[in-house]
Every structure is written in C-alpha cells, then in structure tokens.
Amino acid sequence: MSGELRVEDVRVRYGVLEALHGVSLTAKAGITAVIGANGAGKTSLLRAISGLLRTSDGKIFLDGQRIDRMASHKIVSLGLVQVPEGRELFPEMTVREHMEVGATTLRRAEFGATLDRVMTLFPSLAEKSRQRTGTMSGGEQQMVAIARALMARPKLLLLDEPSLGLAPLVVGRIAETIRDLASDGLPVVLVEQNARMALELATHAYVLVSGEVGLQGAAAELVGHPDVIERYLGGRVAKTADPGDTRAQRPTD
Image (cartoon, rainbow, N blue to C red; front, side, top):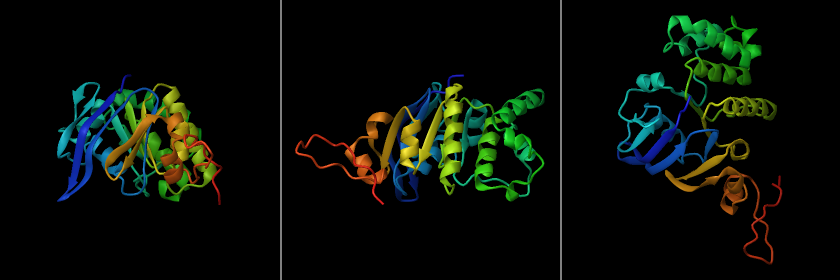
C-alpha cells in the first residue's frame, strides 16, 4: 500500500463562482488534516480529489498517476475512497448490505476475507449486521460509513467531517478509529471543522481560507499558531511583554 496524493494548483468553479483558487497539497503516510471555516472550500476540495467535481484547472495525482480527468468510479478502483459528509447511508438497507455496496470493486473471492477484516475493526457492527442503518445512532452510522469505505480496500481514505453532529464521547471513539487506521498504514486525509481534534490526530495540516491555503505545516506547530488559536480553537493569544510570545490561553466559555 502506498497511497500518495498530490494536488497541484487546483481550481474549482460553480458557474462563474470560483470555490478553489489554486490549491496545492500533498498527503501520504499518516493523517493529513484540512481545516477551515464553513465555506472555505474543504468539501469542494475533497469532491474534486475523488472525481465528484470537475476541476477547472490544476492536476491531481495518486501514486504518480493523474486522476483529475477520471470518472469517480475509476478513481475508487485505483484505491482512493471518500467517506462523505453526512454519511449518505441508505436508511432501509442493513449494515451487511452497505458492506456489499462498498465492495463493488472487489472480486467475489475477496469479499469474505475483506468483510472479516473490516468487522474485526468494528465488532459492534458485526453484531448488528442485519440491522437497518436508519434505526442506528449517529455514531453507529458513522462507523458504517467508514466500514463501507474500507470494504473497497483503499490505498488512501478521504474523511469529510466525520465528527459532524456527534456527541463528544462518540467523537472520541471516531478519533480513535481514525488513529488506528493510520497506524495500520492507511493514509488519511481528514477534513474537519473540529480543528482541535483534527490537529491532535494529524502529522501535517493545511488551513483553507476562502478557497486558498492560508497556512500549512506540522500539525503540532499549527496548534500554537496565533491565527489558528484565534479562529479555530476557541481561544485567545496570550498578551505578554514579548510580542513574539504567542502562547494560547485556555479556551473560555
């Protein structure tokens, strides 16, 4: 498994409105976070990478192969799989049926072993394989969405707002799942409004601002960047006698 993603000067338009203005990023081993406010272009970026939106300019490569002019199903077959914002499950379908949908790129002989491996990661889903997903909790549905994506045996996983609408305790479980997947060698691109969670998980991060990369760098360094603290972490930059000291205070209520 390799799964190296390279995005070069990508632009995306919705009619006359340009949503992405020459965005570039790279992602390979570990977790790469993309954070930013609503409307910054995070989902547009993921949809462009996965072939759901056509780029107006720029290039996208997976393991050195250009993919930005490919159909989305072809991109999936190459090993790049997205877990969409809002999960997009079929409420009347069971957990098992969603696993079958996710496995459409597999040969029939591969299904059983792949399902066993995925259900090992999500034992609670294995116990509910016949349950309709519309009757499940938000956290369980998010697990189904991730498991469905893993059934395609991805080389690289795109996660769009996996913590959206979930209680803090459930968010912690989702975060552990993402960390475990990356530790097992699956590169992850994590798009999140929950900047604190994303930066705690990631090794490298990008901050999108109005369709452009405003900041990028090691996630551990961006956690302490004054702009990130002010805009995304709910805190304030400490004022000290030294103007170069930008240590953050604890977030206030």
